[in-house]
Length: 252
Image (cartoon, rainbow, N blue to C red; front, side):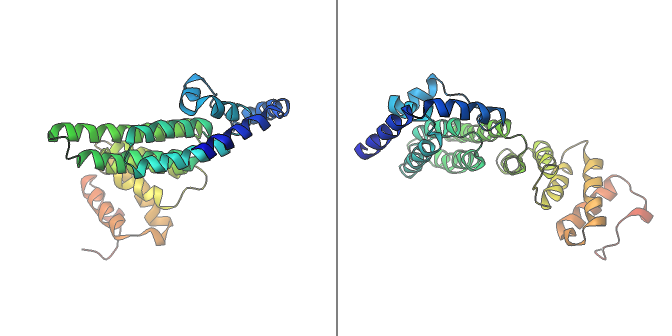
C-alpha cells in the first residue's frame, strides 16, 4: 500500500506541471465524447485526495487500472461492497472502456449473486434470494450506465441481453436488447438469431420474431441452426402461415 501511495503521489506531482496542456486536451476529448463523466466529490471520496489529484491531472487511465487491480483483490476476498465501490470509481474514471462496464456487471450479476445465494451465514432462504436479486440489479445497472456512455456499443447491448435472458428471464427485454445489438456496427451475426429466439417467447412479438428468423433462414444458409428451424416451425403453426410459405427443412 505504501508503494501504491507513493506512486499515486508522484503521478499527482508530475501532473501539476501538465495541467495547462491537459485542460486543452480534456476539452477536445469531451467534444469527441471520450470523457463524458465528470470528476466529482463522490469520486474524491472513493480514491482519496492524492488519487483525485492524479485523476484531475490527466492520469485517469493508470489510476483506473490500479483501482481495477484493487477490485480484483476485493473479489478474491469476497468483499462485494468494497468491490462495487471500486468498480464505481473505475467506470467513472474510464466511462468509455467497454471491458470495465462488462466485467463489473459480470462480477455483480454472476459472482456476487451466487455467493449471496450460497451464504451460509444467512439462514433465511428468502433473504438469500432477495440479496441475490439485488446483485442481479446491480449488474444490470452497470450495463445500462455503460450503454448511456457508449450508445454505439453492440458489445454492451449483447451483454445486457444475456443478463436479461439468463438472470431475469425477461425474454421481451432480452429480445429487444439482442435486436438493438444486431443493428449496431461490429455486431456478431448470431445476435439477430438470438433476438428472434427471445422475441418468439415474448407475447405479441411472434410476428417480429418470425420475420427476423425467416430472413436469416432465407439469406444466411450458415445460420440455419436446428434451434432456428425448430423455432420457425413453431412460429409457422402459431401464426398460421400457409403451407406453401413454410420452410422446407426436411425436419418432420
